[in-house]
Amino acid sequence: MKTVVAVQTVKTMQPIEAVCRAHFGVLSAGALAANGFGRAKVAAAQRSGVLQRTGRGYYRLEDAPDELVAAASLGASLTCVSAARLHGWWVLNAPEVLHLRADKSVDVPGIRLHRGKRSASRLMCSPPAIVLDAFRCLPPLDALVIAESAVVSSAVSKAVLIRAFGRPQDWRVRAVLEGISRKTASPLEVCARYHLCAAGFSVRREVMVEGVGRVDFLVGDRLIIELDGYEFHSDRTEYRNDRARWNRATAGGFITLRITAEMILRSPEDFIRLVRAALARA
Image (cartoon, rainbow, N blue to C red; front, side):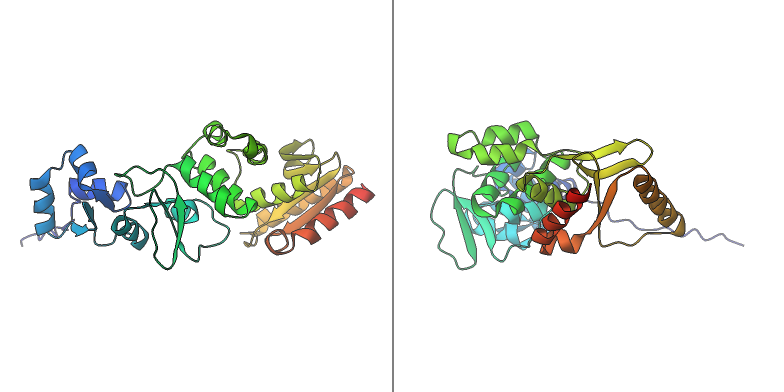
């Protein structure tokens, strides 16, 4: 009896496709050439269907993001919240329009234009430029969430961001950026810290409390704030451990507030009032 061996066919990604995917699916002819893909190789990739020409001097993969394709056609670069979303950074509110940076006027409906210098070969602004445009365009908290996510994801350092806001009038932004931490685990933490600090509270985050364990925030000396996201406890053991921590905190003389994502995001005024009331009892 003959043994039939099944052979699985695996589509191997071409090198030129891999380079394009590393740049979100759209690259200029100059950038392709710099990566070793001259006209002949680009033409071959077009004939094979890997690349398509888009805009003047740009090439795209078939599934390239529409935002970058639009930027290429307009001679602009993606920035602000539009670029943050494509990077996979935290974003509080999805953009209603496309945010582009250009050094010339772009009069197109549905475009929020950020005037400024851009690299002609880059369709995505640099991380500092993205954050800079975010703070000049969005509400401060929305911009901070983007900035903190950029630091957490190692796209840029906090020091580089602070230097990007070097003008004297940017002192408020620099003060906000000083509070960024690479240990932040979620945009909910950013929002809670922002509201607590804006209200003038003395806040420590990710504090190890003796006999209790690590807590999200410690306000003053006796108020513990724990943030509850949208997820429920994954199992019974986690639920018991959580309640045991709560009981140890209470026995140790701490007041513990469990704050929901809905309160932080939709009713920050109620959150601050609750904290003030708890501190009055602490």
